[in-house]
Each structure stands twice: as C-alpha cells, then as structure tokens.
Image 1: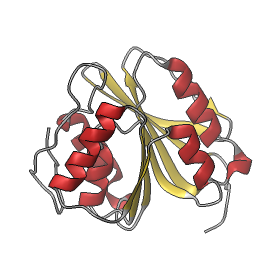
Image 2: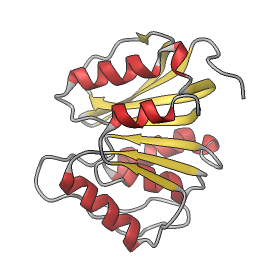
Image 3: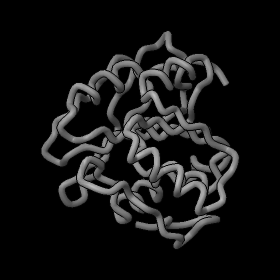
Image 4: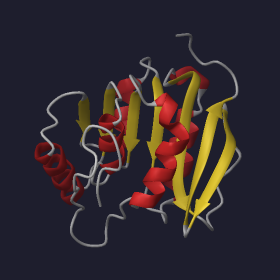
Length: 190
C-alpha cells in the first residue's frame, strides 16, 4: 500500500496487522481520487472508519486543507498514527479515536466538502446509520456542493436516498464499489 499522488507520492503506508481491517486498495483509491481530484485542494475532508488512514492521507497529499479521521480500533489507530509520523505529517488533521458518531456530532455546524466512509462491509447498519445522519438537513455537516462517497461490497445494496442525500453515481471495481451521494437541497450556505 502506498500514497498514489501529491506531496507524499509513492511513499509506503502500513496497514494494521490481522484481518480486522480491510484497507482500500491502491487501485480503488486511485479511481476515487481521479473522480474527485478537482474538489480536493483546500477541502475539509472526513475519512470515516479510517483504518490505516490511507484515504485521508491521500487527501492531505493532494492538498486538502483539513482532514478528520474517525477510527476506534486500537490496531488501526496505531497504524494510522504510525503512517502520519513516518510521513512527518504534523498538522492539518484531527483524529477522533471514539469513532464516527462522535466526530460527526463534534463537526455539526462546520460543513465538510468531502466525506468518505468505509465501514467493514458486513456492518450494514453502520452504512445506514452514518449515511442517514449525514443526510439529515438540520445537522449542518454538508453544504450544497458537498459529496459523500461510500465504499462497499459490490454485491451490497445501498439505498438511492438517505434523507437529503441522493446517490448520483456508482463505480465498481473488482469486489468493491463506490457510491457517490450529493445533497438534494442546500443544507447550509457557504
């Protein structure tokens, strides 16, 4: 696993030991960032269920202004912190070690530009809970031009709508898929 492009291009990244974490593959990460490349510079980016932090680190490498990592697994947190340390990334990020729900609660009223979520594929309730929370109009987590991307198993069915979030695109690659959601109405003004 490595950083694909930007400041930290080609630098290796460590993954947590064991099978509890399934890192986003380099190829799928490259596809994701090819699609959202123009949105990255100076963005506020959330990497939910961050694991090793590879997606958020890729965003930092490509010019995101601020990245918020949410992860509660101790081995994954250790790998993420190790990756940030090895790359000498000392600012521009926040780690929420209690998990996604706590981070979203803390960020309410401070809109994010890009949200990426990648819970364990079998945790279908986490997808529903997080996408529903992000699509709640009164949470002020998103603005009219925000984008939410969920990585999931290709065979896993996600809904087309989660409150104000509407799926606009799905990309499939191997056994994985990326579903892209956008607010159907402005939730805050920037």
